[in-house]
Image (tube, rainbow, N blue to C red):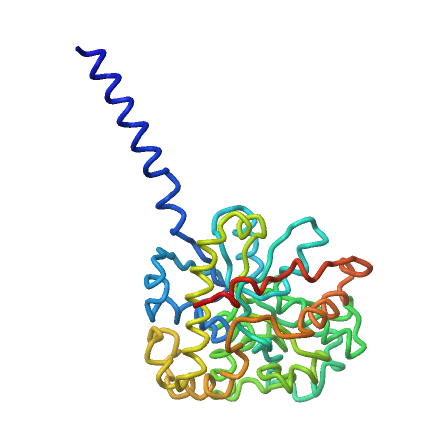
Length: 333
């Protein structure tokens, strides 16, 4: 009898495995890392969660925060997370290194970044004046690092004539400027508004809207995006489509609601004690976001041009068609 029971138990266990594969539940569970969730450029990540759009798609999404996009990229490649909310330029930069990642939903068409200069240094009037200076970026190898190097090169200042220092964003960025550890630095809202409100810094190069971005970088610059490893996208199309559905719905919400209404959905910690400034910054910069998640035409070419100012990218061939996909956003509900 005991043998019959053992056989029956084994059969039932096998049947349960066939009926409900072990990966079925995990397929709709995701970890997404954001390269600074409080930054307005990455607003769609926190907003999608706040609006409940992930849950509407039957997704269990855990949002993880990382101060620098380059570290978020590393977590993705290590398999610790399934997706990253960060700059599209990582998708381009990684390809010559044999790593294939792609933008699945393109959040923005402008970086939303500003090169700020300390008011202690009125002698710095343009990027041509940065020789011998220390420039702050979120992290070495980050998108702010790429953009800083390009702006310097475009102004005729070679890499060896200035120093780049990783100082993060928000409070750590502001402290570095207050202490004169950096004389200039690239950052986003709400850090920009905090520095302007206190008079500690002024704008040197503005890339918060499309027109100013084209003037600074020579074209449309797709920046904030949701990107994943290509191999993962290809093998999890149904789940990736659900993620795209949620994010595209959020982008439509951004374009159909006021900055004040959107701000009400955000954690109070994002306001940095000045809600009115946060709302104004968002109202001024809301136009950076795409309305449908589609990669803007000509954008990848501008990004490649910027990245090729780096010594490590010179002469490297990149198949831009493999750095993004529009399949899921075009099929979004």
